Image (tube, rainbow, N blue to C red; front, side):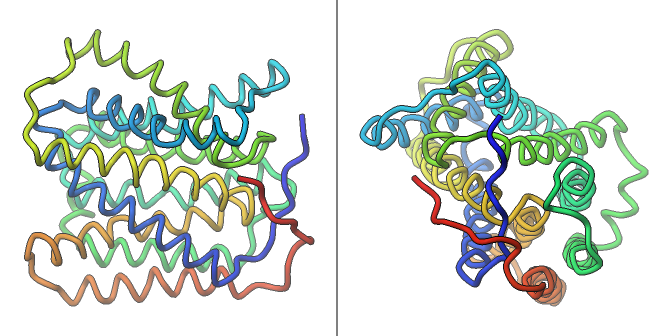
Length: 308
């Protein structure tokens, strides 16, 4: 197994890419709300991943396809695809049927805490520090402010299985993020291969669970699916893989806290929802967490530019 790429302290560019990735993922909620009534959750995931693969495949072919050189690397990439796409897409979609959006955002906001613990115990160079802990607490405080006390009260209501499913989806993302640094492959081609494997898994699952794929889709749903495939799946996964390998998963995971913030903000901008003080405070807290994470010591190690 190849050694993990050396980590560096996040630069301004890294912070900008983290926020941009979160913005893309936050915008996905609007597209999902448009498309999922016509596609169903599993076909939505299958079509989304398939489109992401189709977007990245021409570039990956042009640069030269890369495949794992050992059974261990194949196992890591397959496991990462399962934990990054197949299982969490299903768990979170299923949890969303019976769990309020605020409660779901709160449960998904545990991801940075899980990432901090996982990185500390499972890596050699992404250990827990007081600064990282403070940044995670600030980010989670932003989520608490955004979703409000009703979401906290809602943790005791409804289906326990649905809440465990949401936590399971969050845990899947964390484990997948830790696996990425153990895979020796440039980000674009790694994303392409993972999306290809995800496509091969999700289409049969969707066929068995939801029947034939939807064919009579509205123009809005088609546009939403194209957006999901190109941006939150294709482009965002490239950025995710690149940033995890460059700055470590515990730092990258802080951007997860921006996803519900942007989801609410885009509701204000696109759907005309009311701008609340809680949204402004949440943005300030989450952004403070990112700045605290960046304010560490100088670079951990020297770092060469990543290949595409």
